[in-house]
Image (cartoon, rainbow, N blue to C red; front, side):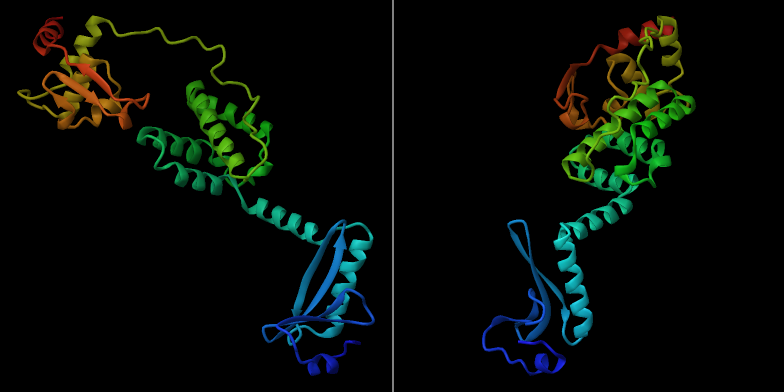
Length: 288
């Protein structure tokens, strides 16, 4: 059928889904489906046949639909896949809006239930504060040079240990983003380790220094006794981490045994610790 505005208006469907092809332009036609009439263009790319809707006949004029169809057919003849081109354009547009800051938000939301509270807080701090200067950048546009330059800034402002931790948190985020299909590369790989060559800490408190800390932490019976003093003294007695003692619950104490639950232990496993006698240690620190 030769498609004109009049012939299209007169078409009455005799099937639930049918296409009336145009005699003047092969591959161009009008599809009648569900009571609607829409222009369509059908073409083949390689072994794949594709059909695209060009709009409702009530909203798109026939000459305009013909021009769009003609442009599609010309692209195919020149070896261009119109659908693939549009998909790539959408990906490029999405990449511009998919910034590091937006991916950080997604990452933290995904990890809030799987990371230990302390690890989650550290990740949030490093990603939202230390890496904030790169937050506006599209995640796919961040390069190894960008990461290396920012690490040097963190070293100058916060030290090598902070830069080392910031690098580890960013690497974990990019590894997650790769698995989510949000980026292709991890630019933190092959950047210099900020702590490389640094001497390990070998400084420990002397007995005199331990005694000074002990006496500076008032507890029950002292004029300014408080929970902080109890926490510090318990840290001195047990050698536990501050988060382990700071979050201690009464049900985690059973006689002389203290049990750190898995969610607060660094290795993710429950840690049972026999509490040492207090009086002997207290006399030692008090008399030093």
